[in-house]
Image (tube, rainbow, N blue to C red):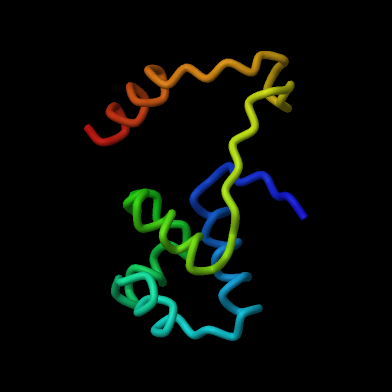
Length: 96
């Protein structure tokens, strides 16, 4: 089943659900990822500043595939182009 993840909270919910379905506790998952249990808690609660490399490692450990589909229309409009410069600029403004 595919799910659109639009917010850090959405991602946290997916990670928490998968962890529980695999019957892993937070400490075990943290050890497999190579992070602290506190990091797992923060990500599962939607902490918006989690390091991407660690999030990707968590997804891999949990067996959650990541797919970027830019080939068709989205609910936000019919354009499939991604303006990475706008995304980076917006992210930098959020850190100020």
